[in-house]
Image (tube, rainbow, N blue to C red):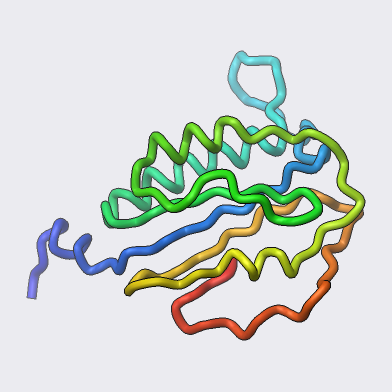
Length: 152
């Protein structure tokens, strides 16, 4: 049977997506070249911010119930913005993220402390890590994954 485009969009289950972005100084590296007339090269963090903006806007087309949260990674996770379905609130918090210094370590266990599943949402954590010379450590073993929680 034929379904309209809007009917298919309603089939998507609401997600709560937490973006965890590394703020180590390596995020300020300029590895990319713009093809336009702009001569300033974007940083790794600039490229990630643009990609997340595109991703969040696209996800909202699938379901207006999707919610987004933002955390940063220094030596541990620090929450910057709680879950919200308001894209402008999320993008404002994202715009404020700056790579500030080098961090010699990262406790990966702190990622798993951010999980608080509630309701019928699907929970997704997207981990963006820039440090090429620092392997994350575990102070405690990660908890067993719950069926409605995904880690990307």
